[in-house]
Length: 111
Image 1: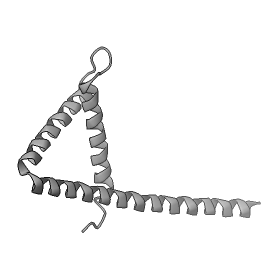
Image 2: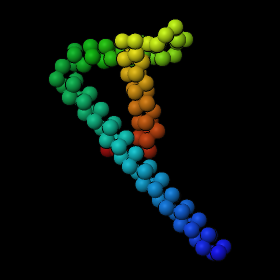
Image 3: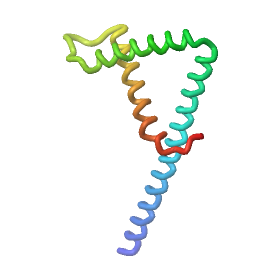
């Protein structure tokens, strides 16, 4: 009985290790693809109109700053509504995407 349990434990360990390795590779490839798409969007936007690119980046920065302010300040009575909730969600999504890219795309060998 002890041999079967040990063999099952080793098998489970190998399957889990292989699953984690495959998941790591998939997440790294996804992060590299996302980083490449962001770079392509920035390049195409800049080549189309540098003024609109700078204006859009400024507007996006203002919205993200407002979202960060809404997220990290002490909450007032009641819930956030309307634009405040939208900018807070936008900031949170952007922060999670940046964290994902930071964690998984730093080790890739993207060209």
